[in-house]
Amino acid sequence: MTTLSGTTLAWLSGLNILLVGLWVGMYLFTTFVISPAFNELFPDAEVRRAQRRLIGRHYARVNGPLTAVLGAVVLTMIFTGGAAPVLWAELLLLALIGAAVALHVRRASVVGAVVPGWVTHLTLGASLLLCLAAVGAA
Image (tube, rainbow, N blue to C red):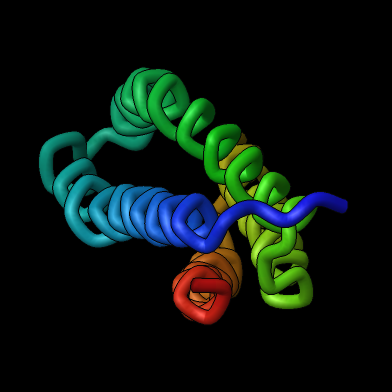
């Protein structure tokens, strides 16, 4: 395992925090602004579901690469001398969040299905821990 210079590691730590902030900010905006607005804009459940799928595809075009870059930054930090335990926790949290979001999307796509509230709470809690891990790794 090679060690990066302190300056490079500091830049990667800052980039890590920035990417986590963007990721969590996008999730919070979607959860607390977009979702409630869709409930008001589209009272018909089927129209609302179709509109969410459309928005979800656009969201994924930004969130997918963002998550990939975040994962790459974290892995680079792990394998080049960063605070490995905290960074491994960050990767595990990303995987947990990804699984919770996938469950949410799958349940939301079924006609008449209700997404359990615990899925959103789990994602929000894991997102908070993700922020703490990113700051702890700096």
